Amino acid sequence: MRIALFATCIVDAMYPKVALATVRVLERLGHEVIFPPGQGCCSQMHVNSGYIDGALPVVRNHVEAFTAADYDVAVAPSGSCVASLGHQQPMIARECGDEALAQRAEEVAGRTYELSELLTDVLGVTDAGAQLGSWFPHRITYHPSCHGLRLLGLGDRPTRLLSSVQDLELVELPDAYECCGFGGTFSFKNPDVSGAMAEAKLHSIERTDTELCAGGDASCLLHLSGAAHRRRTPVRTVHLAEILASTRQNPLELDDIAELSIPQGTASIGPRAEAPAVETAEGAAR
Image (cartoon, rainbow, N blue to C red; front, top):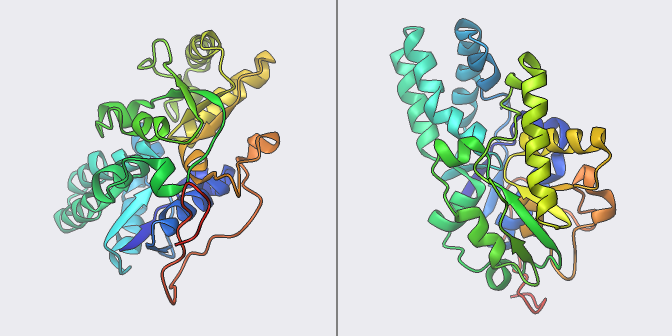
């Protein structure tokens, strides 16, 4: 399958190795990953701030970038951005009187999946350890982000994947469905409320007595990491994609967790002459 990567703003600017991990996981399954040039923001920040007219060219840019590309499905390591494509982009186009753009936006959104959704619903991954060679010998908890829960309906897809990672112990997060307080521009406009929500989430994470808090949205992880740093608490965060990409042969380096770094090896984004080898749970290539 030919899969287009939608990197998203925060991943591209702050956590580029989350995109690398996403590519690595998909290539390990034998798929070709491409990166449509010209892609940018999904327009979520503009829309949430009420700048409808300003969001229109951002929507048009995304639609044109992905319409011009040749791919079967697209993926993004961010539930909030994927939700924005389907929930906001067609709405913006229609409010600005561009029905043709709205229909094209719906077509692009209909082929774009959040990472855990793509892996489970489209690619048939039920056992990350066996099918991806995922290995992460740590005790972690998981924060489900709001858009993934409420707009995409991801449910337990991320935690099912994590539970199947070799040697990973997943601890249920108390009050998991409560927002972390980021909310895009909400955290800038309402810093006191946002900060209090982050404090409550950090307290819940601390109650699990785990090493790390995983998540599927880099924006939420960035918010919680910042709050933890200000509190001088040992809570650290890691993206779902990096855990899935971690193997016995090429484990995630926790000492550089701020950059979510997997320093060894490379992942390509572009045409491939042949499908890559797949790392199995035993480390053999097939």
